Image (tube, rainbow, N blue to C red; front, side, top):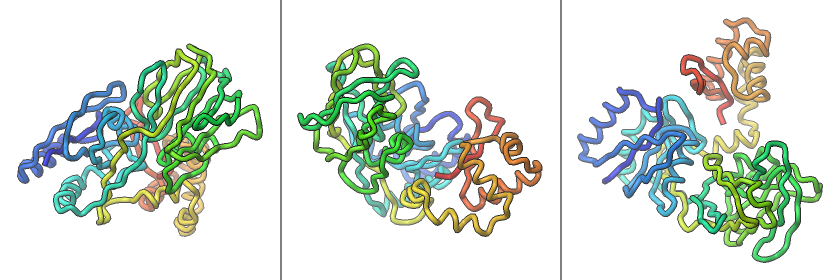
Length: 341
């Protein structure tokens, strides 16, 4: 068995590396560590399995580094980041490998999007392709056709074409639907000037053409990771030839995708989890829900609660797995708290 472990800075400790290597060496498993930072894509090469240790951005960068391969992938939370698609944490990597050896897993295929722009085929997207103006605050003008059928002309802040996986990401924040199951794409206009232009669901077998763009004025953003200038009038979008393959273990080694999808959609489970908590914890949760990720000092400022009460509330929310703690990107000494989605 050949395994490649993709990680980023701070996602694994020296102790993690030592323990993982001892375990893999004991089982005579061939492994390779690949450091994949935010600013680079590398040729990952061939492998039987890929284990990604980190958040969703690292998963996206890993898949962008695999444009013409469908290697089964396992996503694990790192020491700094948690991912929507993760099945467990890096501390459980040995248990995950054991289950893979036993064949105690299923393979979940997730479709990807392929775009052709400037006569070049770009790396496929797991979440979405988004077209926006290069200039902040400026509208784009485009024509949408599907399989040669004219749909509309539009003036908008942008347009997003999302997969079912990406329907819970950028497209959702722009007013798109959540696609639970289905071999389809969502086309979501962003702040269209025409009120009747609403999100469209179309089969992934269809060809989507975004036309009549202004050359050299717009950009194509792939999974929020690659910004590709568009110097032509047309972008052609199809289903990618290679799906993303995720391993799903048949034992519970961590939180599952459906539970987190329910959280993102606004499940009643969250309300039930909050009922038994004191008012201070409920207030902190609601502040994080509306404000987004905050430091302890920011939570104290926005809630008006004493520091000791805020720290107690945060610990309760973490214990309930309603809130997660991460390191602040610009200062690893500072912790940031956010809703666990």
